[in-house]
Length: 192
Image 1 (cartoon, rainbow, N blue to C red):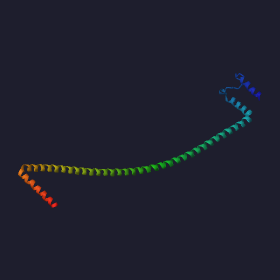
Image 2: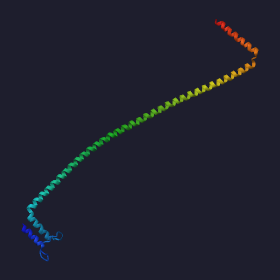
Image 3: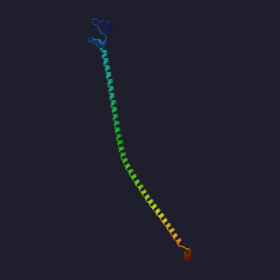
Image 4: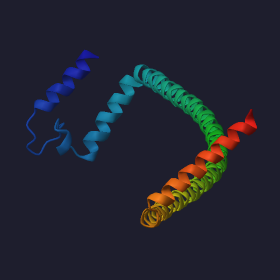
């Protein structure tokens, strides 16, 4: 086999001046050279390469198949996990929506209750202020009436004193005093 390989190497060094030879430049080779090289490779490497190649391809395909199956299993597991999480999220959403509705209803009823309490409190306060106002007005009226009565009484007394002082003389004054003393004496006798 070494002789055959050496002979091909020697052929590659021959000058190609119109004679038959092998071109080692793959890009410059023609169809005949390629078919000869492939034929030699297939003939000599048929047993070794075919089984190796087949085994290697089989291993690669098996590995690829296992990776694909693993990826599919992982994807299925991820999909199932995602479905579980989605169901949990939906359940939480339903729970939160229910709770939000409950809070909304309770909030509205609480607002209405607070509104009614505030209105009642304001009405009570207004009634108390009205009562206080009426009491204040009555007090001020009574105070004004009392002041007017005091002034009228004071003026009447001053007028009466003025009249008495101007009409009383000494004789009338003495007679009034004597009459009063007589009345007090009679009252004293009745008690005893």
